[in-house]
Length: 520
Image 1 (cartoon, helix red, strand yellow):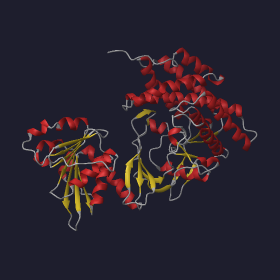
Image 2 (tube, rainbow, N blue to C red):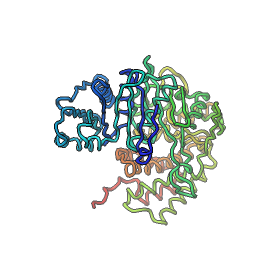
Image 3 (tube, helix red, strand yellow):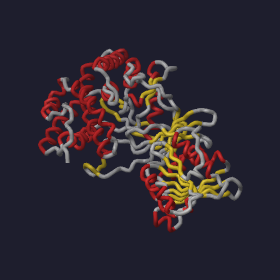
Image 4 (cartoon, rainbow, N blue to C red):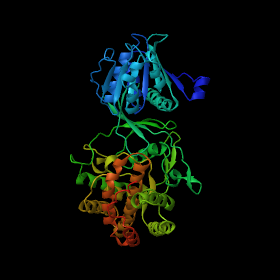
């Protein structure tokens, strides 16, 4: 249950939550649920009388942060402080024996709060600890037995805490009240994923994808997400999952969903991917993915999907506007990174003109459903399946109707691993062979032309995205992929359809290594 905020809470942005804890296991689940949403700079003040359950909470909290259910968590009652090498670092304080608030500074409380997460028991012994806490959790005896946790949160922390409590209620309503939650590694998107393990040992996957705000207008009064047709909630994912399954592809089965809240529980397709132990593409698995795409594209696709329970989704078109705003990320982000200045009007016009002609060329290309992110992180091998179902597809909420070559280019020029030219050619040949087996009249020449344009469009967009992830989102690790993208682009620009684009990019010296940034 949740206690509504008081008038003072509304003024300050604070919020108070109350959670019933019938037993120690429930206390442990709450601690683990909160650990999922904490990060650098969070200070948790933990209050309660002796025997209120603070030790149970602290142990579960620290074990969840460490990802180690057997982690030794000694009480810091006598040492006053214990440090755990979690990510970020977590410092556990127990101020029961503190003699003077000045000792707090000697113990490095402020530094710990700046450089990691702090869990502080008996914070009442030092007012400064309470002042720094953005989450104050108090354990009390419940009226009908058990305990109640009252969680007072500062405004920003309240959003995260409220979300993790909402997820727990969703899992309870979905029939998994005792499930253990653990984080999945993050990706470049705004979505979060969790592993959900039931008491019986069954593993599910939770997608946490609140509705995206539309963002500020960037062109013709529309935000980027609307022009590029980026999914704003989970409805497209749920609808397209049902459709792909019906068309013979392996996708996660949707077990439960709250479309308004942006929460989905689905089956776990395992962890066996398409890369070998050295992180290299496994050719037979990539080829299976190419043939699965060919199977998807054999039949025409109706953009209107009726997925039951009143859910209707109309798959958008990968139109000129969407293609153009995607490649525009190149000029917006990569160009200044490369040249240390914005593009001028003449350069912008030359870029737009070349791409306008290429998009018009694509108007004659075959069109079907595009999953949009067919690459190694989103592909799982299904050893017990055959045919098109041997590959599990994970990421398709941004699916569109567009040139069928796009997804094959995404696979054969995987942005995160090196795909040799020989393997790329093998994948294109496998796709064409599978299509011709179903339709001898399949136009391979036209497909390869569309493939070259789509591969160049995708590479151009990704150069901008990877710089944006570094400059805007603080994720510099994506820059290491840029040389690979340039290798793909250089390979693709040899196609006659891209003659004008190749001349432009080579004139701009885009394919060379990026220079070092200027020194201040």
